[in-house]
Length: 475
Image (cartoon, rainbow, N blue to C red; front, top):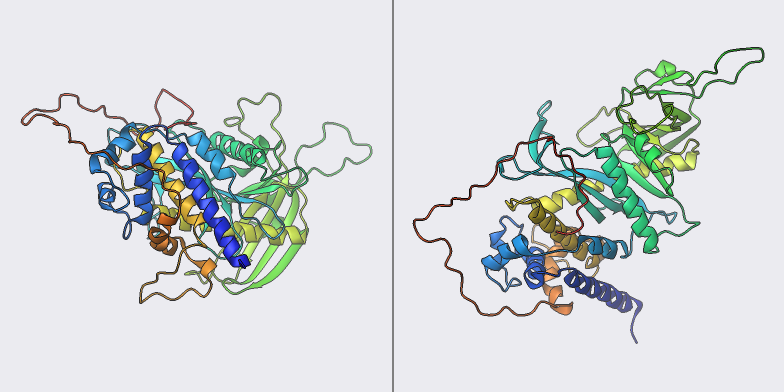
């Protein structure tokens, strides 16, 4: 008799095998080389430090020439991959709601003068005031978040931001396409709870709420502590004349004297942060005074109402006197239960930082020194697909821990790095569609003593006159 656990394992193995087969069908050119390159990323011993080193992995049966040729001349149907990833099971919160997080992670290329479309990427330093602006390719990632403390996220999309792109407009377009794919895949149906999208500081969350107002989404974003919001204007008293005011009293985040009593408040005891206190004020909007981002909008500037949430905790890791965190929610009326759900979802947004660290330090996303944008797109999506396979295999691998590592009490709590460590033993049980390599001889290469007369073009960093919107569909 087959147990329930064995049945779940068989279903998970079937999902992984089916996704690997679909991934292979999304490679119309140099499919075998690109597929085995992804397997080499998954099965290589230790972190990926060099691109050419992956050709030495046993799962990559071809030479280093085929590896470079796959990235240079191969093709990846990225739109089809996006639809495939959207159709996989997604994590949800306790209310059955999908929670998405959006953030940007740069692929730094400071010395790549021949790479086009590099932008200045903001990079935080370890010391105070040590942040830098380094040339690179910024990528906008969208991932579905899980509940509880975990290092797992479900990456749904990755877009490269060009130097001339309006970051807010591109982010809105990216979120819109993801919502449409989730609806088409049956992940969201009419009557379900609205999808919550969480942003960190740096995003114009109020403008994003205006651009995405027609979608079944709620937006939650962090705002700076020096912002000023406005209450609705008071009701017109009898006998007054003239134009009704558009804005009410000011609500200064940095001035407690302008903050009346909250409309909702919660107090929660946590193990990590001590006592968490959240207060919310409803129906607050920013006063828009500049038309720079609203130039395409005819008529008066809109009033975008929402709710402000102030979150304070007793302590943070490495900070004994943490400052309040201010959040803006796109719904103008929130209750105490909603406030509790929102600040917990915002804290889960930081799980995306673990994913970025794993992509860069373990899977080697930013290690290759590719030149063209197409090669960068192909490699980025190979890494996304590798991470997706690890997520599908998280309940199928054994814990091959090192002697100095602590054992995991629950097999379902394995980290991505430990799942990758056991993926090599799982791979023979899944789909292996790549054909065996054919014997061949390397080309003659450049004749000895000859010089390269086709010098690569050098590109400036930052904005240029040829503005174009980056919505790459094929790599």
